[in-house]
Each structure stands twice: as C-alpha cells, then as structure tokens.
Length: 363
Image 1 (cartoon, rainbow, N blue to C red):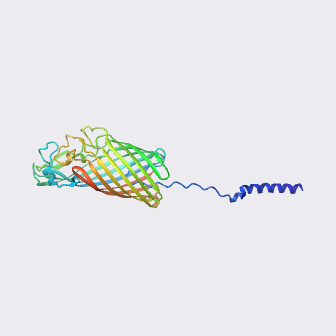
Image 2: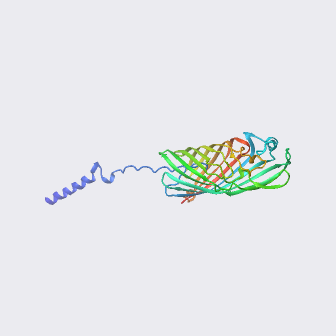
Image 3: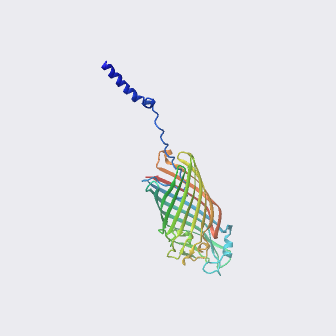
C-alpha cells in the first residue's frame, strides 16, 4: 500500500502544477505584445528639419535643384524692358536711366548633404555643393532711348556657401512631434564672380557680376527653424518656419535682407514606401542692405534695393523607397512647383519655376 500511496501523491503534485490558475499550462494565452511603432512618413523635399536619421546612422544625400526666372515685376505688376530703361533711374546717379535689363536666368545647384543621428532626438546636418547661374541680358543702344542693341549670354559658378545645423526633437507622441533646428551658413562661396556684357556703345566689358549672379553671400548667417509634423494611418501633415539672418555686412559692404519662410504640407502614403506630398510656401525677404561699389552697371540687378519681396508658391512631390526594388537603404525624393503670387521690390526678375530631386543613402 505504501507504493500505491506514493504514486497517488506524485500524481496529485503533477496535476496541481498543470492545472494552476484553473487551466493547463499549455493552454495559457500569452499577453498581447505592443505593435511596433509606425514608420514616419517622409516630409516634402523642400522642408528642412522634419526628417531625422536613426541614432547612430549616417544619411548621404545628393540633391540637384534647378530654378528659372523670367518677366520683370515691379510690385506685382509685370513691366516691359522698354518701360524699365525709359523710367528707372540708375542707382549711382539718379539723373541717368538704366541701359540694360535681364531677360531670364537659370540656376542649377548640386548639393551634397550629410545627416547623422547622434541620438534618437538629436541629429546634425552639414551641406555644401556647387552652384551655376546663367543669364540672358538685353542691352539698349546709347545713353538714352528704347532701341535694343543686342543680347548677352553669360554666367557664373562657384562652390556654394556651406551650412551646418542641429535638429532636436523636443516633443513626440504616437501622432505628433515637434522639432527645432539651429543652423549657421558659412561664406565658402565666392561673391567676387565676374561676367562679360555687351555695353550700350557696342563694346564688351568684364565687370563684377550682379548681386543675384554671385554664388556666395560673403556673410555668416544664423538659420533658426521649427517644425511640427503629424501622422495618422496613411495621412501625414506639418507646418514649418525657417529664417536666415546675416549677422554683419560682408567685406564688400553689404548683406542680404532677412528671409522668413513659412510652409504647410500634407502627404498620403499609398503603399509602404510610396508617399506623395503637396505643400504651400510663403516667404518674405528684405532688400539688400548696403552696396558693393564694384557692382555698378546700369541695370536693375545692380541696384541693391531691387531685391526681396513676398512670394507664395505651390509644390507637389513624392518619395519612393528603394525597398520596392530591393534597396532598402536608398530613398528617392522629387518635387516641383511654381509661384502663384509675387510682390517684389523691383523692377526685378520674378521666379518662374523650381524643380529638384534627392537621392539618399542610409549608411
């Protein structure tokens, strides 16, 4: 009987362990696991400070951008070249009128950008590149009158100014995030570029290029900004502000006006890895303060007061992840747009269009 009692005792112990909490251990339901966080939808290409690399990751971006200008505006009113040379005084001697008018301009910027995630909430971004500017310019004959003489096709190129910024995420919840950025622009680009133009007497002269044709500003500029971004399911949206403030005049005696840029955008992710975006941007920029004695041509672009103004632009774009074709660490972003309102300190060439793309590699 002692053997039978021992067997019964061991059986009872096994049963009590297997039926703990009223059910066999093999049938206990594991607790639900939290869902992984939703990947952040990328912001439009033209928005700075919204996208941050993961901690410990480096993102290399190659960003070509193109911008075209045409049609001179005085305020919001288009003005002809003949009206400009007949009525607009020369900056250095108001008793004389202008003798040349820019017709169109094309700018190409090739930027290389490095972004590194220091921590989950802090990243640094450094960017530089090359800029090329091309200009078509109409010269009028003689010291006065509205008789066209001929066209000049000229341009400038140089290394661009270099920028360095830090982005800090100050708030985040499952839907919203707020990030601030503080940056500085360094005068690595040239502001001594020259070009050759046809003169009113029929000769050609090589002089220092207009302010708009210079590649660098020659100044150290503060560049603060803030971004709010949100995301819910397939929809994303955001608001941003970024400014640019020259800290002092450059050695030539001038600095560009303060720039304020405000952006709002919305996006929709059609499938994982493909997001389309729409954004509206409003900017306000002051005229150039001071002047360069060597930029003295009788043309509107040689007048520092004929810069800056107000502008509203619309852009459409898309971002496509390389994981769709087997390259998960590659991202392509494209965007293009045009202005819908411009009120410029002029006469001044107005902006006609802008387009760009970015190829990003996560390292």
